[in-house]
Image 1 (cartoon, rainbow, N blue to C red):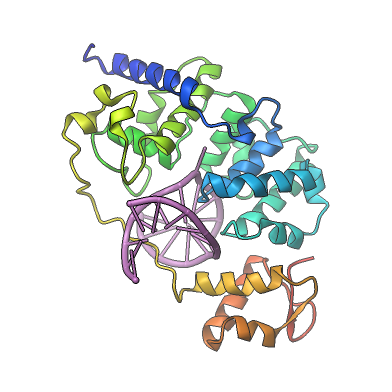
Image 2 (image 1 turned 180 degrees about the vertical axis):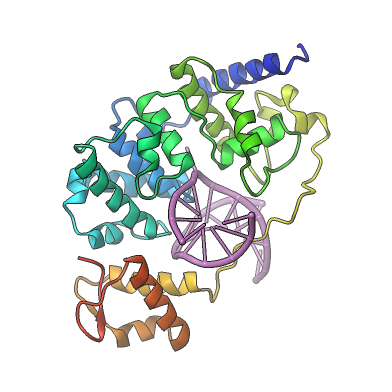
Length: 297
DNA sequence: TAAGCGTGGAT
DNA sequence: TATCCAAGCTT
């Protein structure tokens, strides 16, 4: 093996592609014939939510709203209700708004262009690149948490990527992307899969890794993370938990809910009031009549 | 830029 | 049990 960085990157890509050909999971949104819209829905649901929790809601969602226009025609509150317990319900609202934008501004067709995708509500740098790559076979730098971790280790020699993405990191990732669009798209999904199945955060399975002999982190002896501490999120007693409890009550009711009923879901009044106001500000909750609240119509 | 935003499974 | 982590986006 040469020491030339470009040759090393090429070797990494070849190994990962070969590994993916054997070990890829059979995820429904990867099957041939999956519509761009179905890919969009999967990407929204997968933002910070594990694959196994997305499978069934994804299937049910597309069964009900097979096109952007179908979702756009539904009340936003129905999208929030159907989102169920996937978490971060603002994603449901943004997906609905994205469906409206696609319907009104793109003739009902998911745009293939990265810039157009980026302009949609709830679509950021990662999702825009992912949709362009997975749904349309475009050559993109698809940089999610999995890819960032793989490259931090293989290329950077450290256990974890830094907290924030830098221009230099994107450039380093871009250097791995093969020139042919179809191969680039394959690389994008393959390196993500390696990060999800082998080069995982907690206990990486280096013994079965296809690039173990090319990995800078392994060559350095798996040095522990010496960057700033990665703080946990915390949950009990937070506004997030409160908002979740309030929204769960509204999801379970077909009719507006009296404020008294919410008090049972979250007794602490100051926090309950603050969180209800923030849910209204987000557009996740409306007040159809004084003293009652509901999901948006 | 860093904090806020749900939920549940794994260790 | 407590902590970590999961295909991020927005402000």
